[in-house]
Length: 402
Ligand code: FAD
Image (cartoon, rainbow, N blue to C red; front, side, top):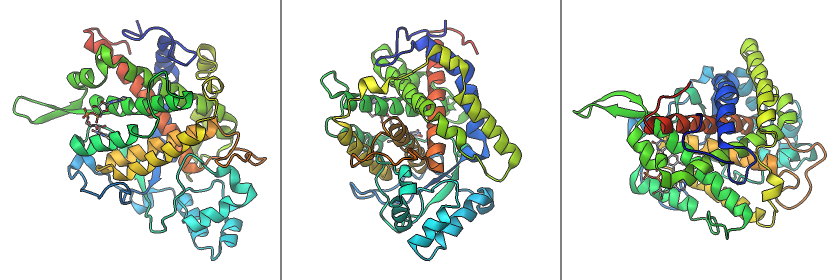
């Protein structure tokens, strides 16, 4: 009864659709829901004002629902700002390295020259993310955004502009769904399509509902749009890709568990930080998941590695394409989710760095923004799996079990 339309095993994965739905609804989803509301996970640092490197900027969506509100200065955890201040005021990269050694996590959004100097030091090399382009323009301005106050939902961003961005993403050479594609490129295609399906699920779940005069009377699910974007039988591959993306990211989180258990989830608010720590452990030690889906996705079986460098280049390009998204809120969530994808790939394929050199002895390290992006991406995908489940039941005329 959990699965009205999806049966069998998620393609290329080891778990059945119904098992995924159940464990997501009863175990993983509620934990993620708590986590993303916590102080540690609700502030994302992002550059929203970069120029599009691929075509002339032709305006941003000016509708209210497209905009984001930045955090008030005193809202962002003071200890984060203080650490940034200490690194930024170092008068040489060497001094910055010394200062960074005192910090608990490297900040990807540091000034590029300081960052480059740090990543050249053996102790910090494990922080490199070969799946992300190196930030090299010194003028980039970062802002903290409270994700809870800027929820991902329908914005009205559509038409030629949005279509061009999706075309630039799917137009990466060799990126295709077909069986003839190299396995890595097929996996990557499915991740992107799954993410696209997730974005569609969020915008249909939170759409403006209008009365006969066109007035918005509430926000909620738009079933007709759900059918058009995801719900009809011929679009089943999009939904399959969503489940696939969810299991892929879940596997990355599981694989990084030893590292994630050791992260200091500190924001300077002891009670809230203790709760964050508690829910992170609950997520990582989840027994239900271990029983139903011990290895949700077998990266070793699908990823032989020959096309890995091509995928790296594609993901770096797609990350740059995010600067061309013409709606602030979509851009912010797009950047967060693609950083989450890059972080999942960094974790799952961390045996070597981008030039083929082995990772340093202390191994993989994650930056704070990467951990925030990873957990928020997993929550977005988890939420979409539940949305697709409930709206599919409604579309079929049934009532939904909560
Ligand atoms: P689109 O979703 O634009 O799809 C374009 C084409 O891609 C489709 O015609 C179809 O051929 C193909 N396609 C669609 N889905 C899939 C899939 N899952 N897998 C493979 N191919 C597919 N809008 C919002 O309201 N809120 C947001 O938060 C938001 N965030 C966005 C973030 C990004 C990065 C981008 C690029 C766009 C975002 N948008 C958002 C816009 C939204 O994604 C759509 O582009 C818009 O609603 C127009 O939808 P559409 O029906 O024309 O098809």
